[in-house]
Image (cartoon, rainbow, N blue to C red; front, side):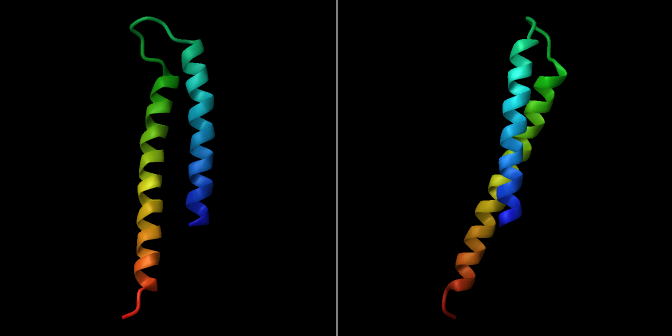
Length: 66
């Protein structure tokens, strides 16, 4: 669970940095490498959040009495 928190924190900072670069280098109608990096990082962040929620739910299910 701690690893997922670190991953989410890292991905958030990557997205913030590359989104700023994408805004600075934006041209009309062009998709920059920064935009692609932000998109991939957002998808990875979404998957990490889903994994964290799943891990939390399964840990709570394990705590239930049999």
